Length: 57
Image 1 (tube, helix red, strand yellow):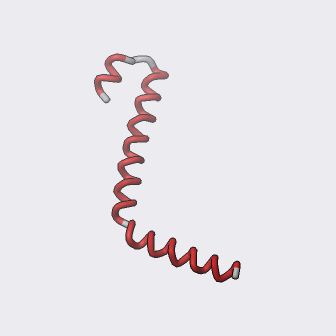
Image 2 (cartoon, one colour):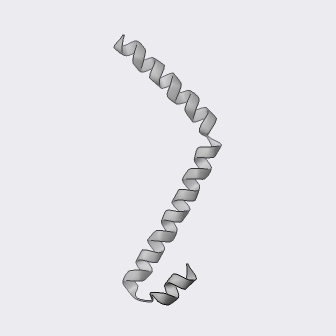
Image 3 (cartoon, helix red, strand yellow):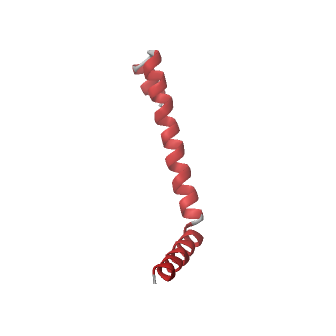
């Protein structure tokens, strides 16, 4: 990140660097929360799908 800032010191590029780092954080957080809640979430999705099937049938 620091290298990019050194290469691109303009204001516009600072915003780009900030948004890129924010995206990195968001991606890491998404992966983290996904791996944490994967089993539970999968159960929930299966359960929800069964409910929908019952509604249609």
